[in-house]
Length: 300
Image 1 (tube, rainbow, N blue to C red):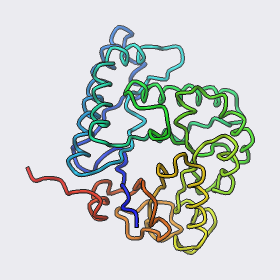
Image 2 (image 1 turned 60 degrees about the vertical axis):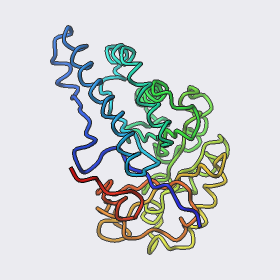
Image 3 (image 1 turned 135 degrees about the vertical axis):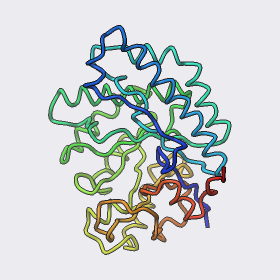
């Protein structure tokens, strides 16, 4: 039986990894002369927290970490390159943070926001989505994370009923996006059945989520035989197969509840040989400790 690497998603329930942000309204209310300094202070603090996240994970034996996609607010603003200037100024600190994960042997992924819809039927949404996903890829480049699905950039299928449009878009994405891209099934628009042909046609790995699959297909639980079938079908889209990532979550009030539970009570038996499992639980590192997947926080 494979001993999986369970992954921590973005933040902790404790104070160790907390990222700062700023709203668009507040940013635009600032005098233009103050915007650079405001973002510099915020970005520098968040980069330092990312650097500490590497040590946090290493100290607890966590080998998979999902990087927050909200580290650098205002970075993808159309017509405003203040964020890009600040990020360029912080290039040495970003490289250091990325090297810390690499030195600890920690795999780093990113799962951008739901509003990124590359196959939208609205041109303005497609444009803003491409700008946003390209910005996320630039952040991964700045961290010196390799352009491969080892450092996955994960999206859902986007606009329902537009799988062909998604398939047509992927080959033309910038290399920084395309070479890291993976697609995940969701509870509503895209089942693994819908995404598999897109993944096979474009060489994009499928990230299988058993909870989403159960909700989408109204199955009794994650022990349904189809869960194992999709684990194996998804594995065939990964090169190499040993890089396969799946998502693990439980419904708060039962298998059909879309809301995530605090801890993980049920790990599907179909995941018994999956090497990399991202844990999507409200309890974050508490859920990993309960799974025996990481050491508890040290007493201070």
